Image (cartoon, rainbow, N blue to C red; front, side):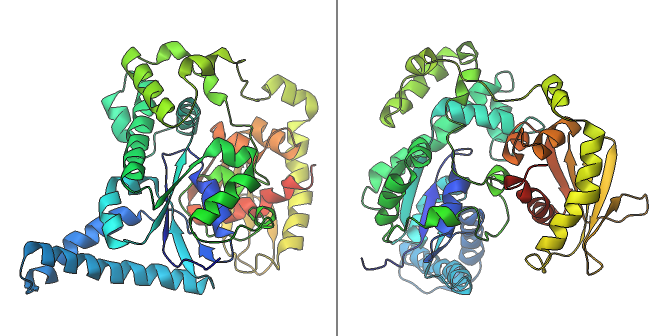
Length: 410
């Protein structure tokens, strides 16, 4: 197959699996896929900048000529940056996955007329459930407008977000069938080899089965996206059907009917059929059960004073570019992991410490994590782990310390 050099865009609603797909694509030797860059919004700002500055000096015959000239200037600017990124990664092409790109899709398709699009969909209620679980302490900016419009019914608010984004993607897909390829999140996690082979073929590259073995072990640049995937070790189906935990009565009649209309267009089952199935469970382990498995204080001492030191010592060569100080707050106890002194230092925190970032974990969740009862992704979805300060650095520290738990349990 002759390789296509056109850029690729993943079009999806939030919480639909775009970060997972981004990491799969980024693991391919020919395509570089960074964290979401808000490329559509950047192009819109650049359009205004160029149009109202040097665009006013353009001597074309018509306003349409001026617009096309501005578009070509933006293509040079953005295309150059993105291609340099791909070149630096020793890859031929680039892919971008920001969910809000759908709001700028007309402009993006003008700037990159040869682009390919992967239209990624996920079942309505599972997306709504994930949005509500993920945003327990405050809604991400992409969802905030819908919350403002429906503050009295957050289920409807998240449903309207799903409807708005997916209807825009469906419309774009209808208008550009030769450039778009439809894929469902459920199919990717259930039949990854089969579905991904056709997905990669649609964007002009060969699928290689060994990519699945590299997705979670390869380096991916950290940035905005679903942090749960960063701490995953494999593709799994355990989030399918979670939407059943949302009472169907919480969906207003108008929104219910609208969801079913879009479900039908996407080939999904109706809400009635969805709720007829056996109700799913959230998989959470109760605090009482957790306490039967371990003694919390012993786990903390054991992990930070013994095993963390061992982990960091073994992985120091792999993480030789990581420098900084991270504080781990586990309820009322705090520990410092210090990589600023040329070696790994682990100790209890002091008032005078000037840490670069902080990772906060609920104690029960931490103990579940260390004992293999729960994964980082699960406690993240439950809102029981968070980061502050330098977020990218916190992600690197968290990955360094906790990814070892995917292999070894204490």
